[in-house]
Amino acid sequence: MIQGSLVALVTPMHEDGAVDFNSLQQLVEWHVQQGTDGIVAVGTTGESATLNEKEHCEVIRKTVEFVDGRIPVIAGTGANSTTEAIELTRCAKEVGADACLLVTPYYNKPTQEGLYMHHKAISEAVDISQILYNVPGRTACDMLPETAARLAELNNIIGIKEATGDLDRLTKIRELAGDDFALYSGDDATGMNFMLQGGNGVISVTTNVAPDLMHQMSVSALAGDAEAAQSINERLMPLHQKLFVEANPIPVKWALQQMGKIPTGIRLPLTPLSEQAQPVMQEAMSQAGII
Image (cartoon, rainbow, N blue to C red; front, side, top):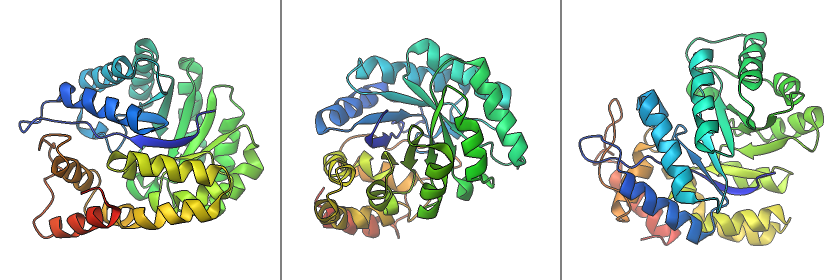
């Protein structure tokens, strides 16, 4: 079971929007050296919605190549088309990803039965470990714990990223799906408590800019050391909150640019961080001690 601090990695881009693979390689190396426990490539934070299928597969392939087996790579392969999600998941398997992260279908608002059938079809089509991803604030679709538990019965569906921030969901899914089903927080602000209450890790935006601190906090939380985890998390809390001052990944890409890690590229309809929000991010970064 993959555990700990997993980075929802940004996709670096040049000013013209082309993917910057040199910066991607440097980011991957930095995360490996800083102790990040796993990399999620081309998720929401990786601007999956604006990459075409060829680019999507190439970013996954390059990430796997750059990691070179040192930590797990989880490929974001979800889509609101079941056939497209299957194709992306097949690509991830072919290029050597360790697992896939599949967001609930967005915009088309499937029923709970539709969600079950969608993920069952992907599970049966591609023999790779698969992690469900529930983020209703972005998808207008909420996978209920009962549906997650039904899907947990399928052999290669191994866990869920639960991004509602509702810690009661953790308890409910654990009760229904059992201890072997991995539970990951998708909400940085509640990620520490999620792990202290029995979650297995956090798939994190904050880890993009503070990988060492997030790893240390996760180690403490998973060990049940609430005092040590809280001490680190208090330092991180401004980042947990202000990295969402505008739509993700706008703030985190700006922060990484300020740190000299990536160039300025971001794809429409996303835009660079507004001038009004920049001092907010600077203060959060200063409070966390990363600038």
